[in-house]
Image (cartoon, rainbow, N blue to C red; front, top):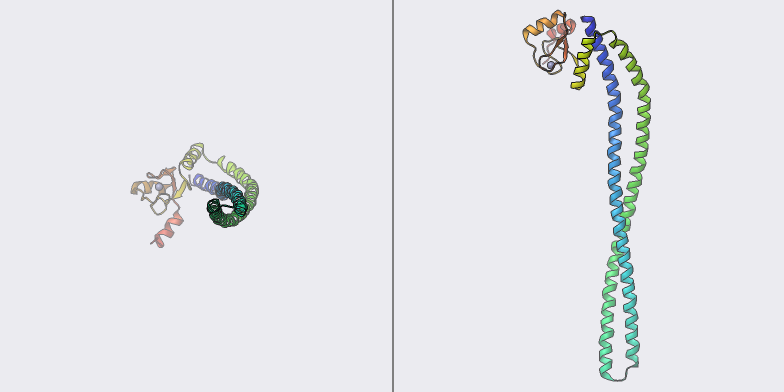
Length: 246
Ligand SMILES: [Zn+2]
């Protein structure tokens, strides 16, 4: 029994090692995926911003047309003013010219505001594009690194798998099935020490009778609380007895 437990513990060590290798690569891949989502959001923002920029440019262009027309109208009114002979027509044309002058001044104001807004938006556009390019380049590098890391652990994982398979062959099928079942249900260890009378998997105290049975090491025992396989290590128990955990 003791030997079988030792094999199970050895198998678990290899399995956990494999798992740790994979988790590390998976975590890095998750980060790259999250960054890619951020990049897509940034791309959407950039598109929206570019559209607004185009709208502002179109508005500016239409205001410039308006200005040109008002200037033309103003000149035309002035020409007529110079040619007029009676004072009633003169007064009417003068009002007309004055009116065009007001329009010119107001459109010029609007153009000034639009130019200012456009300059700001252009600056922001450059900033956003730079941020996008930077993040995009970082993601490319990170993804390449993760792919390389995944490829490089593949050999290590395969070697560990071969080792695990060899050990598994020396373990009784029902013990192995029990171990695999717990591994599939619980994260982390499936075989844990209970040398001090407490299951180190779930930290629950064993029933005195169960602890006595465990110490005999004649059977495969499981924690009644978390179902993990528990084992008794005499050396560890002595150590715990001499230096109890605070
Ligand atoms: Zn337990």
